[in-house]
Amino acid sequence: MPIWFAYTLIVLLVITSILLTMLILLHRGKGGGLSSMFGGGVSSSLAGSSVAEKNLDRYTVLVGVVWFAAIVGLGLWLRLQMNSGT
Image (cartoon, rainbow, N blue to C red; front, side, top):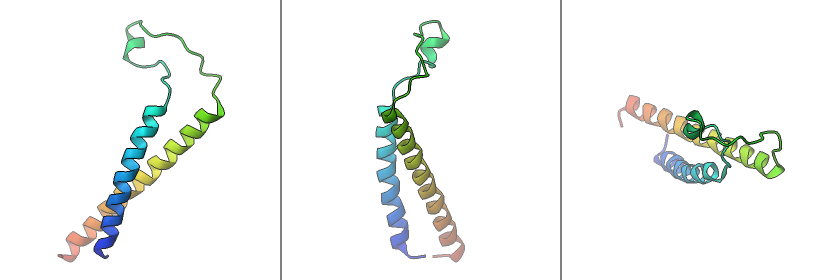
């Protein structure tokens, strides 16, 4: 495979990594972390989830799948390059 394929995957990986970090930071806390383990958690209702939160979840999953595909594609490209000896 040509080298531009690897560069495209690297650029895609960097962009999706930044986007995934930003999307994860936009999520609201659900109250199940370490603070609730030691009794400091505040009970929150998980039933009322808005449309914006559902869309944020969808976008996060979509970007995560693209990120994973870029990593797998880059690994496969690297394996092909190692086997061909170039």
